[in-house]
Amino acid sequence: MTRADDPDDPNPTADLTSSRAQPGAPAQPAAPAPRAGLRSRLLAGPAAGPRSTAAWILLLGSLSALPAFTTDMYLPALPDVAHDLHTTDAGAQVTMSAMLIGAALGTLVIGPLSDRFGRRGPLLVGLAGHVVTSVLSILVPNITLLIVLRVIQGFFNASASVTSMAIIRDRFSGAEAARMFSRLMLVIGLSPLLAPTVGSLVEGWGSWHGIFLVLALMGVVLGAVVLRALPETLPTERRVTGGLPAALRGYRTLVRDRRFLALAVVPGLGMAVVMSYVSGSPFVFQEHFGLSSGAFSLLFAVNGLALVASAQVNAALVRKVAPIRLLRTALVVQLVFAAGLVAFAVTGVGGLLGVLAGLWLVLAMQGMVPSNASALALTRHGEMAGTASAVIGALQTGIAGVVSPLVGVLGATAVAMSSVMLGAIAVAILVLAVATPAFRREGGFHAGVPASS
Image (cartoon, rainbow, N blue to C red; front, side, top):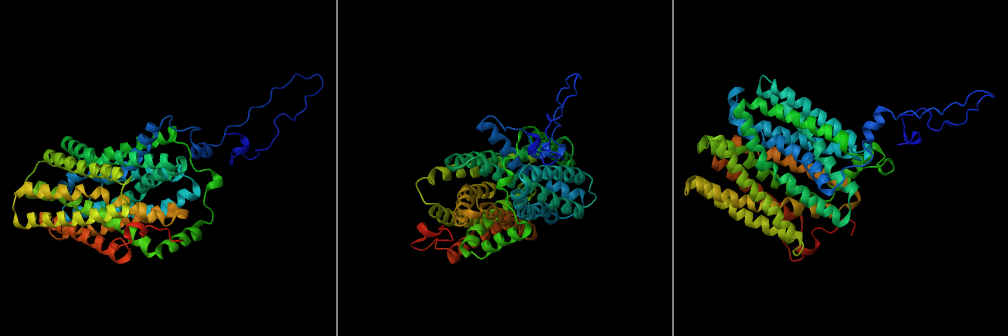
C-alpha cells in the first residue's frame, strides 16, 4: 500500500523529494515514507491471500463451520448442563435455540455491514465476540445467563458464515464460484461428523465447561489466521453506500415478493427438521435408549454421513434435473419417511433400530431441500444477492430456533422429536404448494423466475 492509498496518512500527497539541499551541504537522503496506520493495515490485511484454491477452501470452510462446531460440540453435554445448572431438559435445549435466534439477528445485521465496510472488519469483530462469550459461558452460575450468552454468541458467530460466503462472491465468479460453494459445503458438512466426538472427548476429560474453552481457542486460532492470511476482498469502490435506509429498502423489496419469501422459508423449515433431531437426539438416545456418550457420537456421525452424501448426490443430479423438481420430490419422499419414523416411535416396532432407520432415511433426503430452495430464491433477486442471502440465512436459523424447542416442550422423547420433524416437512410442502407453482404443471420451469421478468 502506498501513502496515497492510506486514509490514515494525514499528508498522503506530500513530495518527499522537493526539499532543496543548501550549497556546500552534504546531500541528505530522502526520508522514508511513514508506514500505513495500524487500523489501515489491520483492515486491509495481507496483499495476497492463500496461494491455492485448496487453501481458500480450508480457510473459508473453517470459518463457515465455526457456528456448526459451536452448536454440535455442545450436544453430548446437554444432559450434564441440565443437571449442573438445575434446569429441565427443555431448559437445556433452549440454549441451542438461543444461539440460532442470535445467529438469525446477526445475519441480518452483519450482512449489510460487510457490504458497507468490507469483510475483514466485521469478521474480526465477530471472532473476538465469539471468544469473549465462550469464556464467559464457562463461568455462568445459572441457565438464564447461559441462554443470554448463547444468543450473543450466535450473533457474533454469524459473521463467520456471512463473510465467508461474501468473500467467495468477491473472489470467484461463474463456474469457479459454483465449484467453490460445492466444495465449501463438503467441508462444512464434516462438522456434524467431528464436532460431537470432539465434544464428547473434551467432556470426558473434564466437564462441559471444557467445551467452551476449546471453542474460545478455536476463535483465537481462526482470528490469528485471518489476520495473517486473509486479505480484504471488497474494494472501497465496490462497497454499498446509503447506510441503513438502503438496507431497509432492499429488505422491503424482498418481503413484498411472495415467491421469494416462500422459497426462503423452506430452508428454514428444513433446518428446523435438522435442529429438532440435533436438540432432541441426546435425550432420546442417551436417556431413553441408554446409549453412552461414545455410542451417541458414533450414531451422530453416521447420520451426518447421510446429510453429506445427499448433498453430493444433489450436486450431481442438479446438472440434469431442474432444482424445483428435485426440491418437490425430496420433500414428498421425506414426508413419507418422516411418517414412518413417527410410526416406529409411537408403536415401538423395531425398537432402537426402527427409530434409527427411519431417522437416517429422513436425513438422507435433507441435502436436497435447503440447497435447491436457496438457489431458486436467489435467482429472483440477483441484483441484491447479499441482502437476499441474509434473509434466507436469518429465516433458516430463526425458524429452526423457534420450532426445535417444541421437542423439549413435548417431552424430549422419540415421539416428540419425530412429530416435530414431520410437522416441519408438512408445512414446507404446504408453503411451496400455496405460494409457488412448484406443484403445478409449469412448476418445473417458472418457480424461480426473477421477480423482474
